[in-house]
Length: 265
Image (cartoon, rainbow, N blue to C red; front, side):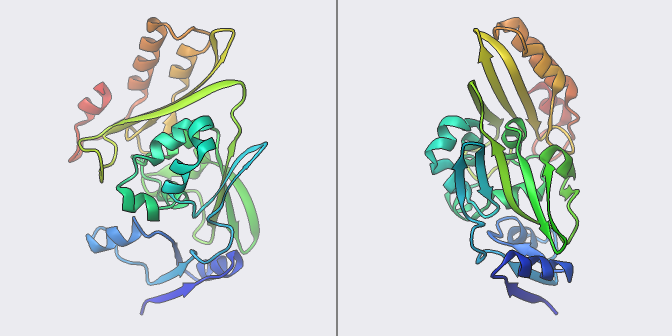
């Protein structure tokens, strides 16, 4: 027998999760996967869409506080995100279709833990962390420590993602996300990459690079970052960073591309 509860508070939601329920909000992954026969619908669901505060995007001096229910459409339309956290806006604009971006949530994207998800390489480069709640309280986890494999995280079944903190970029910092896909909408990345660069005195003082759909989890590439750090972004440094990113890739063959093609891209 399937059960469903619409929670009004975080405490009510995590109590239901402690009893075995799975949280649902936009449902753009859960419902589609069940309809396509990829994963069965869980026997117990707890809706978190009524919980106050989970759908708010707040900008502070410390950075962004993204509630787990903030939609991709809300991220894209936020002026400060587009100007100061550009890679995140780039990625959110590419998620699914207009309908998917209106319903799909940033929290659902993070906890889905797909190696091909778009928003998480930017979040990783931006130094984001996740706040997880349970009946025992809250804890904060770096995203690099949260994802453990395709579709799996280090969160326990009783933990609910409630927010994501993104630190305020400092100095002359810019970021971007690009991906290769076969059509403009309703597609996931064949490969993708995010980069964040901070300039000082016309040189790259700090760099973060993360790759998408090229390993079991999205991850940064320190060798590529080191190839750019201290340089002026000259072609030789960029070529070295690109080579390092390709060498760090551990792609697979699947219906969208071969491993060799992914590594070349």
